[in-house]
Length: 199
Ligand code: GLN
Image (tube, rainbow, N blue to C red; front, side):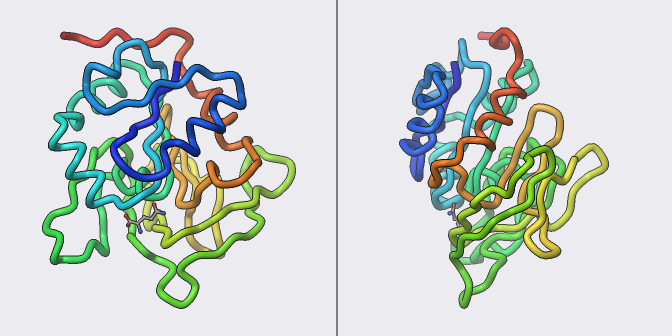
């Protein structure tokens, strides 16, 4: 079973894609929703808001523990921002940007600037034999990656899809297109059995 963090943002769209692939989906709002899941998707939306709600609902440490125990995590756009170890470009008026500090990446928010802040284009992705129709909406870029991180796609020079073990982060929105190949990639990363969570 795969969970979709359902605090804010495009969680219904992820649910739809996963269900179209035959996956049982549970919406996650509280730590008690995590046991029994093999994977968790953190959707796009607004990362400051989602991060604050994640802290308010006491989800930060349980999600970290879920990953440490063997669960896979896939973050798209704002979800990728929340998975990162460090966030750059957060508007200062919103205070410190909360993040899960799961993946060894530094993310720059809203990195494509105002003029081209949303666009769609074919993206060459490592492991896929045809380009993926990637939709970018006020998207971040992965500005730097640690040693254990595999870069799977670049838009120009910028890293927009990366994997580190059971962690997958995309700048773009694979849940908003009819192409399910990035979700299928995530499904190959799930552990065979759901991790056992303490408490
Ligand atoms: N710009 C948003 C943020 O920084 C992310 C946009 C998205 O998830 N589509 O939180």
